[in-house]
Length: 470
Image (cartoon, rainbow, N blue to C red; front, side):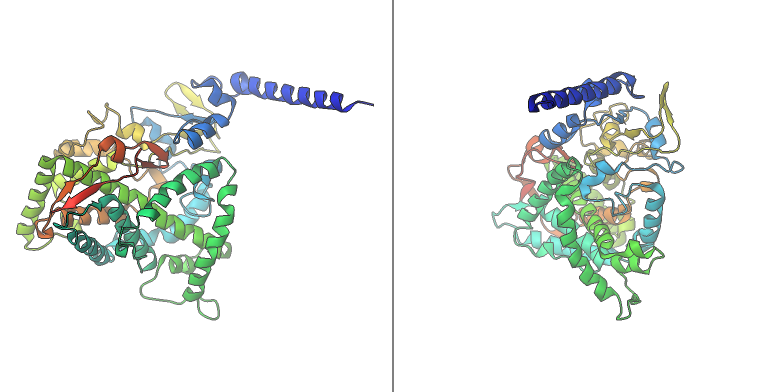
């Protein structure tokens, strides 16, 4: 009879042989073994887990090919005609694949997207423009209360509160009221940053970190579902529907209308429209305030528009102002989603130059690979609205501006985000605002520049964009 020591030794040898066999296969026999890259990344997914959880995001999974391309050929995987899937393990960053953004299968994504896409159409957003104006006006009044008060305001927090109220007013027809917070929800904004790091741990724990939290949150949406439905369970028809009613009124099957699934969709819509828009407004404002010549050019252009129309220009009119277009495009270029966007095609392989990529291989790139390419954008880390002023050059550069993604999974909230950005800049840098900002103890590398990759970019420091109002 074998002793305990012998059993332990046999088990150890079995594990060692298994690990050695797996290592040899991954390093030398796997279909991707010929592709260049760190051997440790090919050997174990712990390589990526280390960079994600301990080194502020990054790394590569061993069955993923990361493309850093200086041309537009990488977009083959993102083109509209290719029905590529998303790898579920990666998008567990957001909890589950229960929302449209994180949906794994292309056919399920199309089903879910078709149900809510009309809600985000340009026509639907245009009907909401007055509410965006109202909320931006509310922000302006809050900021004017700081005028000549020798009191510092955190503009980054203020912009995130605006973004939250715009997103929730659009989604639920009632804002969360963050603009009423005395300190512009400073602690809440810090919690979003922590949520991003938590998401990275969730990705590498097979989703267990957030599973319990998600079911607790479903109770909140269940209450909203009961309000949206009649006593017989049928959806109440209303002239002004919200995102919950949009889902319930759709032709989606019953399982797609469960409280948990609707909760995932609602939380996705809210989160997607807050940190992203708030941070890009922060970056734009910093560059306009730190470079007074650029800020002055924008104010002059907006003032001319005021004189032309005899009133504050509308969103559509603001979109026609060349320098403002340059400011917005540069802000979007410098502050896009930092995380990579992995896809895989389960039906067919791809070619990339002379390389043949097997079907099912996860392929990824990031928007920053293009946005910070000197081949596309000379002096790529500089804020240069002037590069967009020539109309022909603008058309050429627009091919490489990808803040909303590309293909069938392009961001649904693009139009509401642009409406918010243009109106905010058009009002706060308008002569009618009646005040100007002066930066206070704000450093670009510490407080603004991208350092942490929690899918959205976060700066190294936590002070934010702080300013006096004069």
